[in-house]
Image 1 (cartoon, one colour):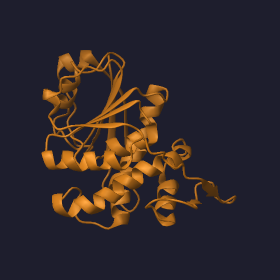
Image 2: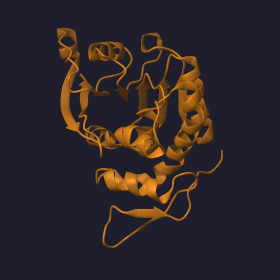
Image 3: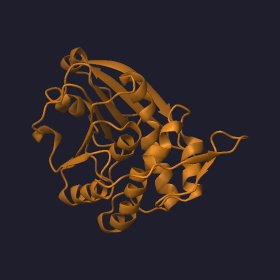
Length: 243
C-alpha cells in the first residue's frame, strides 16, 4: 500500500489558526489557511493528517464535476467553503458524542462525497461506507478512493433500503438527501446497533420526525445552527443516538 505523506504545519506565533505547509499535493497555502482559520479549535490539530484525502477529493472533483454536475458551478474557493468546510465542521459534534473513536462511518446518498469523504479524512474511522444509488457518481467516489488508499473507503452503488449490512457501532451521516428525515432514521433502524449515531445536515425548515416508533428508537441529542463564511443561508446539524 502506498504510504501517505503527513503534512507538517508551521504555525505563526501571533495567530495559532494561521498556517502553511511546505509540501502538499494539490492545496495551495491559501486553501489550507482558509480551512484552518474557519475550523473549530478542536478540529484544527486533525487537519494535517486529513490533507492527502482532502486533496485527492478536490482533484477528482475538478475532473469529474463538469461532466456530472456534481456540485454545480463555482470557483475552487467556493467549493472549499460550500462543501469541504461545511462537511468538516460537522465532525465536532460527532467527536464529542462518540468519544473520538468511530468504528464505521456511513454516508447515505453520498453524491459528490459530502460529507462522508471529508469526515473520513478527519475522523479516521476503521471503515467508511459511501452509499450512492447513481452509478456514475459511484464511479466518481471510487476514483477518489483509489487516489488515496488510507483510510479505507468502500463504495456501495445502491439505496439505503437495499443495503444488506448490520453494523453494531456506526455513525451514519447524510447531507441534504432526505426531505423527510424520518426516512433516514427508519432506513437505519435495522442496520445499526444501539449506541450508534445518526447525523443529518439539513435546512432549519426541515420537519422533525413525529413517529412514535422513531421517538422510542432514537434519542435526540442536539441541534446546532451555523453560517459559513460569506454566506447568508443558515445550516443546521441534527444528531440522534440509537436506543
